[in-house]
Image (tube, rainbow, N blue to C red; front, side, top):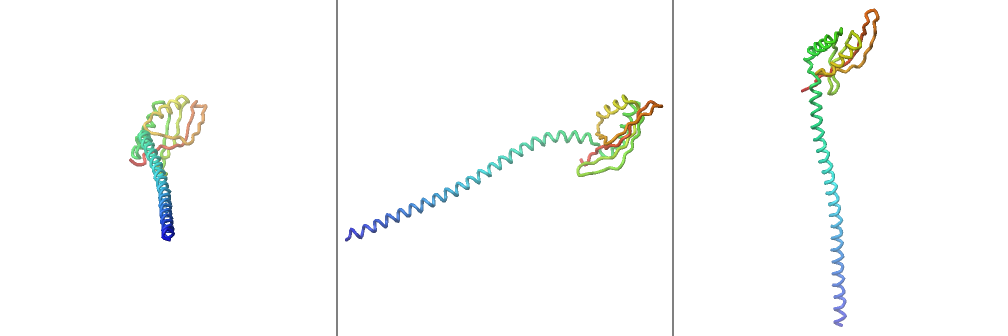
Amino acid sequence: MRKNLINPIKKGWLWAVILLLITFELFLIKNSFSLAEEIEENRTEIQRNIAFLNNLATLQVEEKEAKKYFEKIRRLTPKEEEIFDIINDLRERAKRWDLGAQFQFGDVKKKEKLKWILLEFALEGDCNQFINYFEDLKRAPYFVSIDSFKVSFVEEKNLYYLTGKGKLFLRNAD
């Protein structure tokens, strides 16, 4: 009888150990899954950081390139107080090519980060003089854009008249 009594105790103890091992195994599996999720989150975070650093490195390279162009643009955009010097320069360049020239500046305009002054012009001469003048203007230390122009020819004088409107871009801020 004693044997019968010990046998169920042994079996109960064995089942308790098995149950304990299964519980421990389930605990390890659960921890493995949460650890796998944490590793995946860390991997995703690392990939985002790598992408951010790559973008940052690219932006730093592009910033160096942009600074070169910004400096060129800054040199081509005079300050507002230099407008009178530019008017004189436009007239001198026209004189250099024997063009009759009149220039009139309008209001200073601003839009976001751009700033310009409206320009109206009237030139009088032949085609070669116009070509030479505009080629010379390409080398000017400022930038003029021509928005519209009109050419007419007067036979009695054998001269072309070029009238138009444009913009002289200005430095917005230093």
